[in-house]
Length: 70
Image 1 (tube, helix red, strand yellow):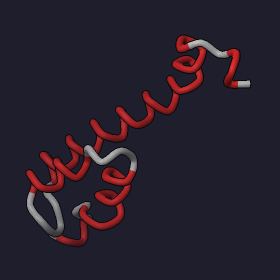
Image 2 (image 1 turned 180 degrees about the vertical axis):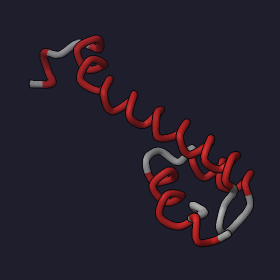
Image 3 (image 1 turned 45 degrees about the horizontal axis):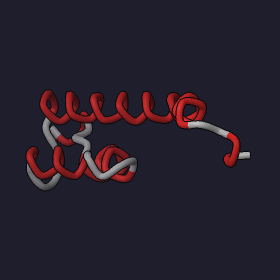
């Protein structure tokens, strides 16, 4: 199936994934700047976010400051 697909068709297939990843990245950066982080420091977490999907998911699970952490 992928043999007959050109670049534009592949991009159309991946577009929702790209938009989701960008949205998740932007959300995490805004969250870090507004609320802070639980461990490590802000610049390091922002650098970690740029590791594909793993970075934002790691931040949401490990680094996100929760309301009870205040």
